Image (cartoon, rainbow, N blue to C red; front, side):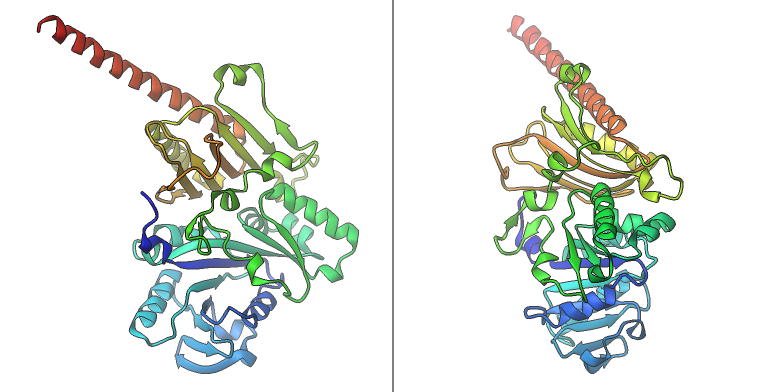
Length: 390
């Protein structure tokens, strides 16, 4: 399935998440004053929860206001699905100005996974909106303590496409360096930006998704960022090239483990980030079976999965994306982004290491390949038998 006009015209959606007091509102205020943000719709929980009063122009309806910047701010009092649907209906009817980007701000205690699930699975939303990026704010001063005490903050950082270390001017170099190392171990692929008073260019936060609106094409390398796993870490960086794996000839994994003395207060000790590469093409039936097994049995452990697959019988690659129990429908790319045609899958997991994932997918693929070969041999035998009687 190549990119259609409908896919390319879906509204880019960014989720801004982060723990309580980490600076989400400050960031949002600063972003909305920047040039080029006038066609943005912002969804928040309640107008009273966010300091946007100085930006308000007029109330369009009970739940929608227009800002001085030209942006639309929508208060979501029900669930996110209703909020996004209502916003799109008002846009279609001309009740609010056209917008080409949506920003969703979560509450500080929110698990971002349900929001990502909504954007990936709702039948209407998936045709009108596309997940572009997850931006997570982390307090430079209190971030380490919050990671220790609140699993939500760990999850927020682990699934991010961009991480902002806020209040960077208030923390010492030692504290900032320690927090950055911890965040990098959690999520090697996400760029980490120190930020003061929300001052960061919007260009650094957006267009992190699979589709690049500037080139009107799929930008796999920017989206997947698998190279981050090749160069991250020293002691934590593992190259698994054992004789057993060389014999199979199927993959290499670059894993970032964590060993902090089994400190029970460190929730991020349970998180691993790694990239698995398969040299041989993968049978689609094998991958689907693997995905069904893991999402049903260990879905809560698959925090986020991104990948590009080289499938048996297909010339073009297929991109896959999952959050916990939900796999987004696969997207066929128009062409390989480079001369490297290996399958690459990036995982961020909880209490689930690379070996069980790697070996289970390998064995399923080998079993499907063997079945296919048996079927082909049986077909050839039948043809030969028929030819004898011609």
